[in-house]
Amino acid sequence: MFGELEGCGFEVVDDAFANCFVGHAKVERLWSGGRWLEGPAWFAAGRYLVFSDIPNERLMRWDETDGSVSAFRSPSRHCNGNTVDRQGRLVTCEHLSRSVTRTEHDGSVTTLAASFEGKRLNSPNDVVVKSDGGIWFTDPSYGILTDYEGARAEPELPCHVYRIDPDGTLAKVADDFVKPNGLAFSPDERHLYIADTGATHDPDGPLVCIHSVVTRPDARGRGVAVQLVREYLSALPLHTEVALIARAHHVPLYQGAGFVSLGPSAVEHGAGVWMEMRMETGGPADKVA
Image (cartoon, rainbow, N blue to C red):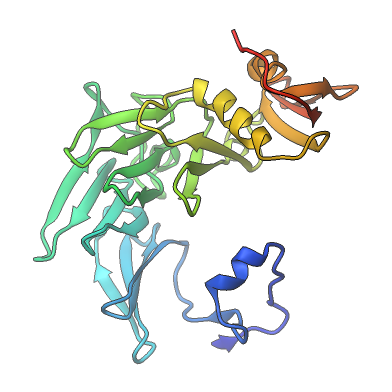
């Protein structure tokens, strides 16, 4: 049941990925017995992994020294995403409390964010900590749609992406999502990659659409997408063909963001909400109104 899994190898498509593991690494099953597992967070000093068993409302702990698995916290308030901050503390997204919390070194739990502009968050889903101490997290409504992974409730806010600054200030950093889900920084932390899994509950939503948000302090909302396209194109050779999945209302902006030619047709995704554009890079980006 445990150990190396036959037929579950992996393929390296980017040489940079090879630096993440040793050459003989294999896919292994460490444990079974959870109902729905998410949010792995590795504590290197303790040689253990913390992860969430969401419907069973427990936070689990796998010990590398002996392979044992035990309950780290139960009940866990239907926690989902976890990460480790720069001080080695556990940061957790909780569905039931609709908050982002931090477990201190003494075991106490501090609430970092539970509301925005006087309204409760939906159900924080995934979280990552930047090197400057800022905590970035997604807030879809999955945890309040049913009682299976939280408590059913009406949303008070749209599904956004937020940042908790080191001084505790909570800011909205992106609002152009259906269901923002997993997120991760690029190695240089200039971009934050965010998965939008809106098709799970919205027939017009994206299946799995990866967005990228420029992480400068002044980056906010929809405007970051156009700037991101400019920065991306500036690093490509001339006449490189690229494809972009974007919301339909962004198409006019992208046409002026450094693309020389738009493909012969724009394919609609989800009743015209999403558009696939094939373009070719050209000279300096045109000014975007």
